[in-house]
Structure formats: structure tokens, C-alpha cells
Length: 176
Image 1: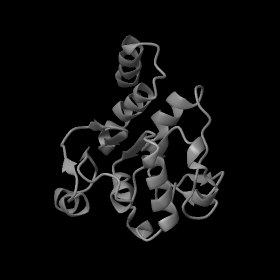
Image 2: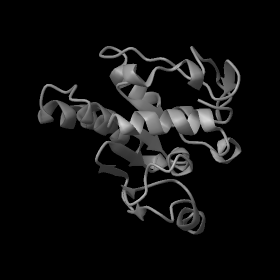
Image 3: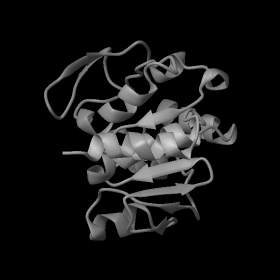
């Protein structure tokens, strides 16, 4: 998490994972950050406190990663997790952190940047205009696909009993 992170984009993921996993909020700013929606969230740890060997998923919310481009602690953590081939999921502006850490070169990704900015930020990646894209252990999504993103993360973690449960979960979120 970081000041200005977009909470609604990860809320369905947190909901789907809360009973199957332990979730530890990590902040790249202070111990308390304020989301885009003005929700104040207290982090459990900083990047330096994370043991990459104990991470089963790195979830990066949307927002603006540019202020953190020179944060080697963040970039190193992302690279260490990538080197373990652990799922890394980033939505909207979140894939910018992956570009800054140089872990998506040659990978198919999607994002929430403008088309012009996306061509610059993701110049070494293959941009796909889809809601959710999975390439190896990297899961990326556009902001409006936050529910599909959550379901795909749980699918990639193998936490659905079968594909029918995944489809039912998506249908539940999408029902009027």
C-alpha cells in the first residue's frame, strides 16, 4: 500500500482471500496510509520486514507508482518475489511498480494508464487490451475488471475447488 492507493480495486480480492490466507498489509510510506477513497489503513510492515521466502502472493493496488520509482527496497522485494516465481498481481496503476522493478520485460500485461503513457511506461512489455491478463506468474488488470481480477487471483492460487466454483463466484459478484 501507499498513499493514494485505490482500495476498491483490491477489496474483492481481499474478501475472496480472507478465509484461505493470512494477509499482511505492507506500506511503502508510513505505517498509516490514506487510500484514494480517503480510507486510512494501518500497515503491518514495511518492505524491509518482508521475507520473500514467506510470500505466496504479492498484491499491488492501483494508484500512482511514480513517486516510488527510486525505492530500491520496493524494487528489490518485487524482484526477489519474481525470482521465486510467486504470483504477483497488479491492477490499474499497479503494473507501473512491476515496470519500475524491471520484471515484466517481454511479458503480456494490461494496465490502467492512458494509451500514450502506457506505451512509455511499458515499452518493454506486450500491452494487451483485455480486462485481466496472466503471463506466467504475473497477473495484471484494468481498473474496471477488479472483480475478474479477484477471481483470477484465487484461481491462480488454486483456492477454488473447481472451475464451477470460480464461475459461480464471478456470477455472484456480477448479479444485479
